[in-house]
Amino acid sequence: MGRPGVLGAAGRFGLPVPRIAAVAGLVMLVAGACAASAEPGHVGSAICTACHDDIAADWAGSDHAKAWTLPDETTVLGDFGNVTFEHGGQVTRFFRDGATYLIETDGPDGVRRAYPVVGVAGVDPLQQYLLSPEPGRTQTYDIAWDVERERWYPVFPDQVVPPGDGFHWTGPYKSWEARCAECHATDPPHCRSWG
Figure 1: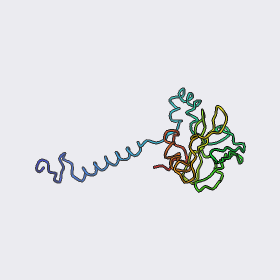
Figure 2: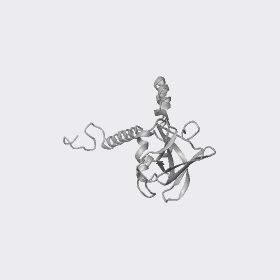
Figure 3: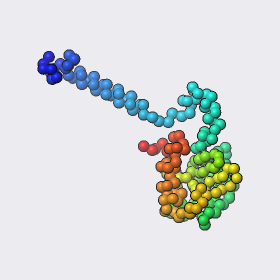
Figure 4: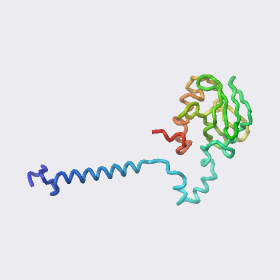
């Protein structure tokens, strides 16, 4: 069989070297496929509900179940009845166009325009609205709805920043994807391109 520790035509275990290589390759291929399929990802609530009905029922009625939702008549609590709110010289208008909730405000270039609400964050004691100033980007808007007092208010009352500033609602510090979604949402549909 040759010298100890040296593989000849037959390997250490009496198998030909090509067969050992094939078996090793197959083991690595299967292990790689299993590792790839075991990568964590969002599976949805239905998977858990199958075994945990009582917990799922409690969760469904909780604030956590409503922490991130799509905007509709049942989820939007703020006054979108064509009302305006002024803070530090900046005027925001909240209104609807049919089923679409809109916020009119200064954009990243300082030009006023209406942005559709693409998400709703929170339910109590406040609710913030998510806007998309450009495709693939979602931002948290700084004027929130006070659920208890039923009024609009600035989340950062001492902060009035112009477009172009990192703390403007269109800036990097108000990015839903980069700053908020990891803790406040589970696999929101517009964030699935992360990677």
